Length: 562
Image (cartoon, rainbow, N blue to C red):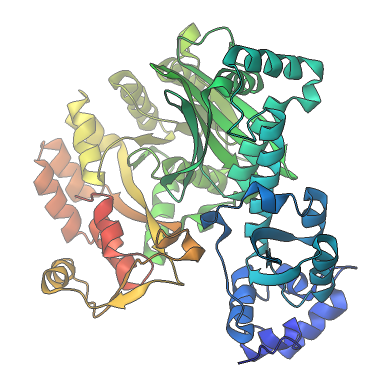
């Protein structure tokens, strides 16, 4: 069946029910000079990139691809230069005889397609991809290819003598800092991470090669492998950027990089660790331009939000956020600070280190090298007439004791603690040596949380729960007939998931809990009481997300709720 390629993009989107005629008319009138209709529609919030690509894929019969899953050969990249593909917003991906295959966001952009034909002398076949995927691919392949070529890594068959190669690399790095291949390589690593929306970058040394891995939606995947000969220079560049000691490769170091990538402010927490194969580096990526304000970004249900606001709205007491590393505790604390930040409030934080700078908040970094610990910092803060204190983490008995003392003298204290559930947080404080009566009288509430991957809306399959699975839902008072199963496709990088959503377990320390804690009740007894009080446990919150088709039962079980 012949493709109906004469239809304009606006007509296709209208027929698919994505936009209205009024929205198309408004976008055409108000779009900027040179701006395409699809770009204008997205800018006005009438549709998103995936909706545009989906509509075109269905209507025009043009295949959609996930560029993250493809390997693009160097020979393809040589046909079109970086300046042209960046300006044209396309990505060459393959060659079939005398035909070049390009990924494009708008396959009805015939001038660009004709320009590719004239430049390459080849027939052009188009496939669909979102513009973000195309931009990411350009950064990954053209940027890395150019940088690796300048490092002498482009052709694997040409094996250079390691010592000679290192001398050449040193020489290239010393001639012009702005043109150093190592600087370019680090910049490309950071650019790709930001475009891929990675939360962490891992540089892992091996015997012959080292790996660059990105953590996306909580899962690590390898981006590429590079010769180990450049690892030392790469780590040194990162150390320079994060103000570390480049002469010390035998002890762990921590640092921070504040930079701007494509106009977006980026904050990087850097950690290095000596291993038997060389130094490993991990960079935590904080895209400050994507940080929204307040509690809205947390995804709390209406009932959970009301309870949470009640907890942090009290004038004194301790509110603890618990969960393992990477569960979003810091995000919750910063959202709380933003909610509480006001002219008539003296809000002070003590962190290790400060992750996001907030206007109007007095933020303090701990420094163990000069014995400026959480506990010592807290003592100093209490002499600064604070209303609200945020402690990055309660790690030891001394810090816990001072935090409790602060809450009992009229301060609201917010902090995090590493426990698996809200009830375990209560018993953990007692196990740390805090008197049960002090815990009961100071603790206002506990919030336990986790991050679940969201099931991909494009490939998820609807399945009927097994009898045992249905029993699990029934035990948690949830009725369900069907649920989603992760499959994997080009939209989600074959993982079956795209994005993450938080689940919460919020315990308000009421009179019943206070009495039980004071009497040193067992953990299971307190758990029974919080369930009687109507608290939704983490497992229930996770299963509710399954019922709402936001995630899968496998994902809920993966995070090991108990």
